Image 1 (tube, rainbow, N blue to C red):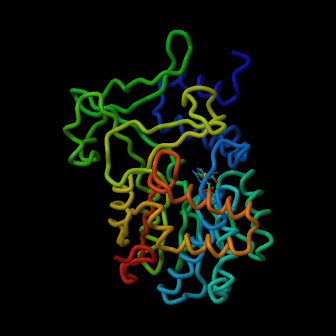
Image 2: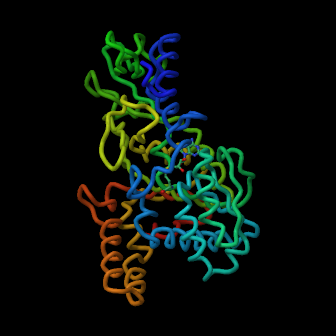
Image 3: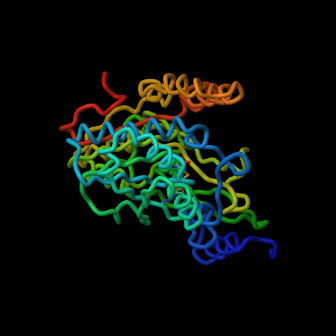
Length: 365
Ligand code: SAH
């Protein structure tokens, strides 16, 4: 037992003392434990890390998101000041590329303050270093609820998938919380809470209520979607980019990734990334219930092509060496292609805004 990490020891102690813990509690400890959490202790991105996100694939991604934000701000009537808020900025790459691109819209650049919601001290440092050359100094917050109110544009790429997800399993007597406990040989194992969750049925989307016994349904608390909905309904706009499904569905999408390969979510807690698909239907409905208008989700490929990623690639290639041109083409393909290896179809983009604005850029029909 002595070779166990401090986080694994702590989780074992908790289970020994209070019984098996919900999957959501386990994910939360693994990712964001204040001392040993995955995001708190490392920089997970890039070739030498665990996974690569769209902004890390190419500067084109952040540039187009920046121009999207500037266009949304103009639709909002160019309010001054306005907050440009990013949730979970990782290395800060998307914000750096966005701020560089919006130099062509100086009014926007002058009007915005940059606000970052980030719990990881390691990543806050990386973000600071990444942004410093833009001449804009962000302010950091632990949670979106802490960011002062006012006209805002909220951006989140691969943030929601990192938030803890609850798994519930259908049984003859109702839906039971899926939990993690210890078996006789001391290994972490999945199990079910003995009693069904009371009054849970209204939480399950109607079409899924008749799912067969054993079906797993995943849900996240609505507070983030509520908070975004509240903020954007009065002259704001938001863009949520993530992998997930358009309709609520049955299925276990919890996955662990380390060094660009799938791992066992119950092995070595705190050293691998844990994620689960985003239920865009549930997210959109929660934000809508707060008065936001929602657009999409549409596939990332469609969104980026509508914003002009192909044209941006062509113009970058005009000033590129043949080797750089090949890299630009490869990045374009990776960001927009479907199939198993591309990010174009798995990733979806949901926009939310003040209903008075009408469809946001990229979502016009
Ligand atoms: N948007 C970045 C990084 C995505 S990874 C990119 O696309 O490259 C998820 C990010 O969210 C990391 O920066 C992580 O530290 C942060 N994060 C995860 N859970 C969080 C939470 N509960 N509150 C605030 N930030 C969180």
